[in-house]
Image (cartoon, rainbow, N blue to C red; front, side, top):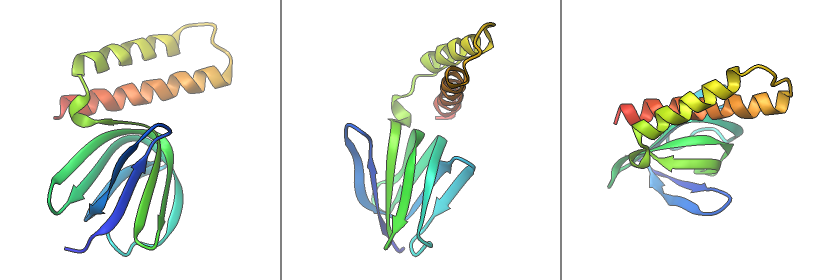
Length: 136
């Protein structure tokens, strides 16, 4: 099977840099899947499942929370704001995080749009964490 290079970095670490056969990730407007020889692009990442398929190690799955993606010359670079390996997610903690985020978002008196956006993003991340930790 044909491979291409995939690198994932966060503001504090390099998470991955290896040859892969397929990558599926959330963009701001929906899931996107890539294989070798895909057209170059730059895009904004969303919140959700990042799945990386390799010839040697099978699938690797992560919870991705925002950032940017660039594909050029068969090298995909994901600049992630936050990323967590699926096997590190705890269903109970994710449920508590979702409950707290939902409660904070529905409290009266929050009129600042930036604050509401942050709370909504936290709810999205918590929802994805619950889904990923429950379907392991």
